[in-house]
Image (tube, rainbow, N blue to C red; front, side, top):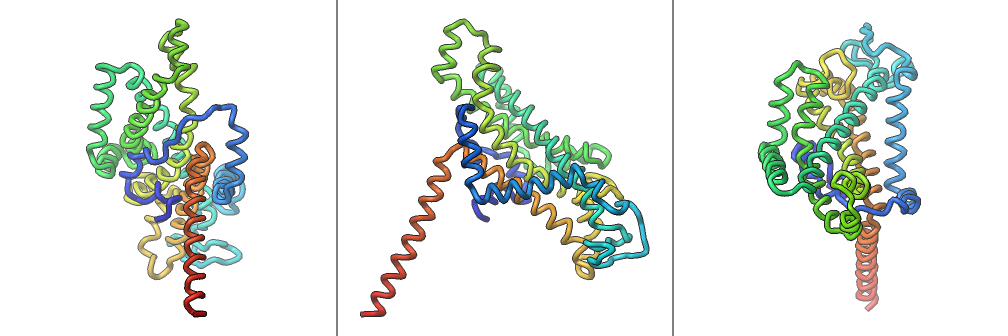
Length: 331
């Protein structure tokens, strides 16, 4: 898989190891420069367009849908047509309407889950790293226990304890994802504690709460934003997976993972019933991954510079080989 798609994949273990996406904290005053670098990245611009389209779908989907997503008709398993632009499913329900209505459920659940994971991870990681001592050891042992259990098994166990619903899926995913965030944030806090401006604040008489809220947390916004942005795509994939397994939104809810489950029996005879929601999920995940990688590169230009240098070297090597081949042919 390419570098931009690295955080993806269906393995829920990737949700629990976000360390590869962390960048160093940057000065908030550099926000304008960061935005310019983000706009200059072609892949990030494509990601922004994709994410923007899906956000518009989530906000305006019910208004744009021309049909009731739950309406059962006699037009079963119809292919794309003027009446049904994306066709119909096994019960004659319009797929376009279900995709539009499902965008609000799927994306909303992913964003809310990411927010909960971020809050819990930042809270636990900050307390652990700043307090140190016994508190740090207890928090990290809890993190180790969570990370020891395979992510998919733990998510299935937690989600299976409740009635199938998106809330149960959210709880299951929060249970397995927060630990990776906490470990990363703890490392950032330990680094921040040694910075001169934190030591200066302590010397000036600032208490622990003030130091954390005024000096430590603001300087961790950048890496946390990168983690949360990329994680939305992976959470969307995980939510769809658990719903496909029957643990998420129950029928006839127009959720993308549920649509995959409903259409799997028609994959060979009417593949559009499965391909349309599947491609929708893939495109949304790609958009969030591109935006997350673009934000990471914009916050840490060294990553983008190294990537461009590697590309230049490959191109130079290809040109050199081509010239050598022409020289041998001429000789």
